[in-house]
Length: 277
Image 1 (cartoon, rainbow, N blue to C red):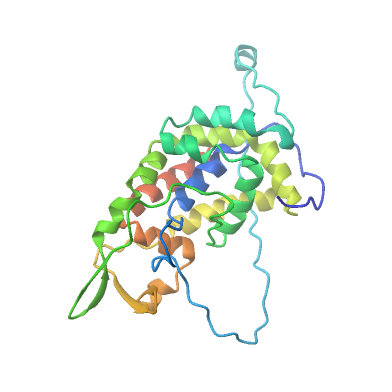
Image 2 (cartoon, one colour; image 1 turned 60 degrees about the vertical axis):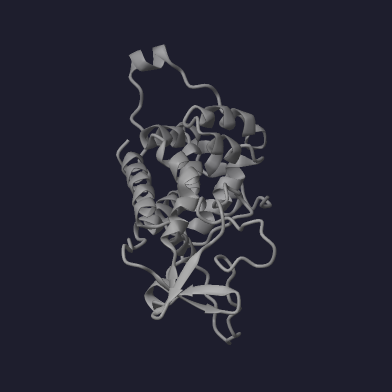
C-alpha cells in the first residue's frame, strides 16, 4: 500500500471505516471487468490522442463531519467501546464488526480482502474524483454479458443489463446507513491514520468522503432508452453529455435508473447520518 508520508493526524475518540467501505461498495459495485476472452466492450476505453497540456493536480476537498455527541455518564457505564488496534493489525477487528452490518454473502466476500482500511482510503481517494480503483477494492462482477440491441435508428443499451447488478445492489440496499455512520465514528482514528499516510489531514479526509457521496448523488437518472455508438470493440454513449460524465457515474447509468435510485437513496441516507449524528 502507500508509503507513509507523515504521521497520522488528530487522534480523536470518535472512530471510522464502515462508512467508507459502505460507500465504496455503493459506488464500486458497478465497476468490475468480466472474465471473458478479449476486451469487454462495456468497459474498454479509447486511447485518446496525446495533447500538449498543463496538467493540474485536483483540488483536495475539505469538510468537517461532526463528531457524535459525548455519551452520558449512564451510557458510558453501560457500554464502553473496545480499544482500537493499530492500523497494521486492524483487519480482523474491523472485519468482525463489519460482518454485523450485513449478512449478505456477497458483502462477506467483499470484506475478506486484506488491508481493509488502507484499501478503503485509497478507493475513496479515487471515488472523490469519479475514478473507480477496481483493483484496490474488487467487488462482485456483473452477472452475464453486456448486451445491446440495434434498429434502424441506432444501437441501444439493452435494459436487460440492469438485472446483472441485482446481487450487489441488493447487498448494499440491505445496509442500515445509520449503523454504518456509527461504525464510521467508531473507527475514525484508523482511517485518519490511513489517509495521513497518503498526505491528507482529517478535514481533507472528511471532504473526500462527502465528495464521493456527492458524485453518486449527482448522477442523472435516465429513464429513456440510452443510445450508444461503437468504434472497434468499444461502446460509448452517443449523447456527449452522458459520455462526458465521470467513470463512476457512467457505470451507474449502466445499472439502470431504478438501481441508480436505490444507490442514491443509500448515499443520501449515509450523508444525512454523517452530518447529523
